[in-house]
Length: 527
Image (cartoon, rainbow, N blue to C red; front, side, top):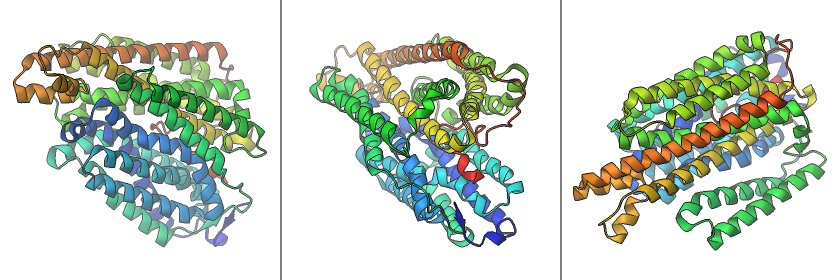
């Protein structure tokens, strides 16, 4: 049972729309923070001297923490007050952004991103779960849609805002912009939100949370460090072994728990399993692609930061248009056909992109990026709605939480694995003949580092070799992405259950929010 402060006033307070606006601003901040860092990474790599592995950690520190803490964060809100924990989450996100703004080295940025991940893990599930205390049932669906749209809108805004900030200010400004937005959200929560709790909510499983964080962290560490240390390095092997042990222990613990934090039994539902697998692989592909692309656009094509943001819009635009258009297509052809077709389109786009050369220019890139957006949008929405739509109503909340967690895991592994493939390929293909060993090692850390050395030492041949090596590595990444999408399409076509061509049950709330890592468990908002 959920206790709501001043229940009689729910839906009658005119300030509820102002509170909703503040929640939208908070989700918008999290939305563009998902993509803003990708545009900033080349600039940060140049000014902080960050290699590819360090750039991977700057991106993945946020995602790993977010994946590990999102489910326990929701339980903390149930037990200790959703408003209190939402304020806490926004405060932590603000503090992390402040640390990032003032950071002077790579380690500080990574730490800041991890702190921001803690805050985001609290804010994301709770932003929707407070809506029942503000809106009557007849207004709630509209409110859920508005909040979800806030994070979706942040996706295309992130590259534009980040690019503009980087062209006019220092790299820390991409974190500074979060501070007033988070402060506005805190003020609105304090002044406008009533407190709600669920005394019957289970306790936070600290052991499972620790196993999730350490197991995923060990796996990501091994993947990121392997290109530099070697896959046979004792530390890498130890981390691989630790990841296997910790994740196995997590699965066994959750299977035996009376009220598991991660309900693994849901994977016995064929529709949930294969739709979730498709959504997870989609996040693997998209997150890896967003890590690889900005460096190609800036270092190889010579775009500035704002130009890079603008050049990502074809993909973002295609994604959003397709995500919004997916529902009527599903009604006409069925979810299995649409998910499979969307994945095939995505695979085709990736294979087309793998044909990119140093001389291809942006026109060809814009073409395959647009197709990527359409393929992703048409597959992610019906996959997510299909995953949750196969579950009984009383398990929709736990299903949503498991789906979101696995998507975050897919995103984290995508950045780590595809980034490592790029790093090792770039290092192997880069021609450093004639360079001192120390300089050669630095040049091999990233395409940005190679360009900096080439400019300082007046070595146009090194810059040309770096461009060629990077494009070759990117092509391999795109081939892997295409293969993953194609395998997902075959699995979807073979194993997804046949679905009715009419949406008898209606769309799943929140399923249309296709933002990476920001699709929020909507079950809480229906309480």
